[in-house]
Length: 563
Image 1: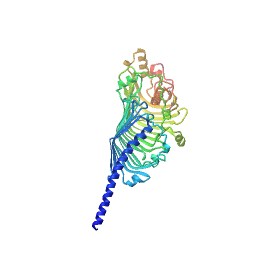
Image 2 (image 1 turned 120 degrees about the vertical axis):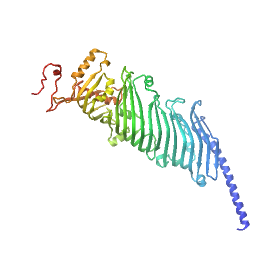
Image 3 (image 1 turned 135 degrees about the vertical axis):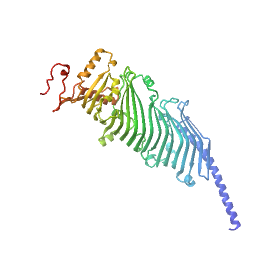
């Protein structure tokens, strides 16, 4: 290569380099100018005279094919202009691209990655307050397309508030968000699950939510949510009252439940995002691992007459959010119910261990109910006092007029003295001895009443009356008399007669659905023991006869005795 050629090539490439550097500077200036003016103009169209937007610095790196903006700040004021409605702060935004041709000359702006670091947002739960004004010139805007390989938000925090400066209704969480393969065409409807987004992964940490009622708080250690794959994992969930039991009850001023719930983890599978909306909860399966539920009730407070608690299907149908969950699985759950009786400070407790359960067809979508011909099914089994298994199946008709349901179940044999942990505190009696030889029940009902039958086999039952808990001498003597003389010690009796309990209960609509179920069963136990009429008395053959009630008292022989 001769000298002239070398000089020519040197001058040529030098000019190219100077042109590129000059072009870079011009582009950098124009982009910054464009961003400053365009952002403020467009934001003021959406929230007229309610927006302040600025940033510290824009850096355009020509050879590295990237640009960054530091310390972006956006503030939206209320319509009055006096109060701050929402804040957004982003410490650093970085964009990089693979090709200038793709970035500047194609009909689609192509960005390799868009990274947002330390995004801090503070917004109201009531999104209507943030609703922007409809753009008047939306139809005349210039069409554009943009494709982004990765959008990454890291080291970020989110805060929702109900009322500014109040703890009640406040939600906070640290999070990281990765969105891949984003494509947006301004002339078409954006469909995240229909090609608009390739993948989404949201990770949260230290989630904290104070419920709007002001009495409860939910904390979650971390979550992983992949909505387009239909998967979610939630770890270490804790629902707990804000106050201790005594202060909680005093602030409520009425009889209510004090609830604490811990869950090891929750898995959601096959989550579906309905086309055209994000406002629905649809999943094929939810698994709940090792939940622990504690319920305390202080009956020294009055139950309000105007309280009304709807049954589960009414609560489901009244939800504004469409819900369809085909199956909920609960594994290894622990439940304890603790009650402080009226006029007492001592407490009675009943526990359920190793509970496993399945809920099927949890939905309020009428089309799903009709298509599946489905009912809400609740199946559960647990050890009562960690001794004997209680099993139950409850089926509710969905979209029915009367709230029709049916229940069947059983309790394995166990010593009845285990129930003294509860009965011995809430009632002036305790079980001295007795064996449950098996309980089987079936009942059905509506929103307001139940009827059914119970087969309760027991033996060697003896009940003591705690006279110190009864003020009236007459009542004390009467209960002692009935407990030790009149109460049958066996069912079936030695004479072969088996008393089938009658379940018959009118619901108190001020109380929960669990109270409705349990009190229905209580009527069956009372009927079996003789406190009310039985459903039936069966006569079994080849059985020994027990002394009749009158024989015990010494008034003659038992006339039914066989020779």
